[in-house]
Image (cartoon, rainbow, N blue to C red; front, side, top):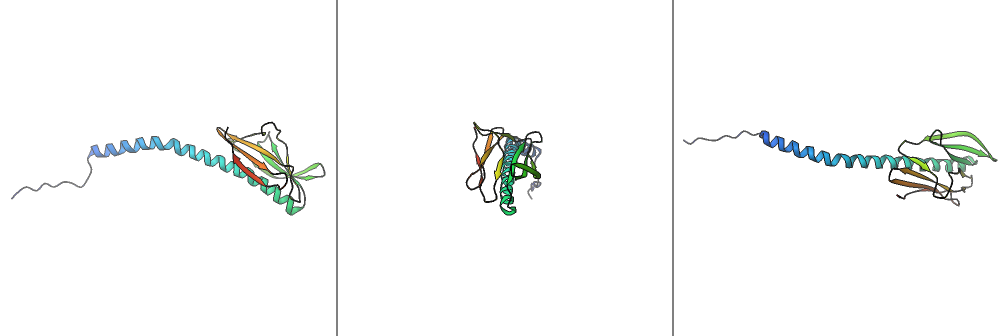
Length: 155
């Protein structure tokens, strides 16, 4: 009768240490990439929120039959929607604070002027330049149609 060699169904300590080392190296490589991706998603959400507020102001002007003005309040770091009535501005209807990740800058060669939406769909047009580190987005309002669009224009 020969001796049977039985092998236990497990892993050696060396195999476990090797697997743990490979996982540690992989996590060091992947973690920064995930962080950058999350930052990009957050910035895009901020830009989408700004565009959404402008679209809301346009819709309110059209459905309520009264012009709406969107201004950037630098002190509170927020976009503010107000009723615009005959040269004077009315009560604040909506306020959207901007995250600390995003800086608002005037378009090149321009001023950060209020954007006004008229009841018939027109606007005075304009744009907002949103900067988040190397990422730069421009949110534009077409003067003829009042259409709001966004575009990434990294510098």
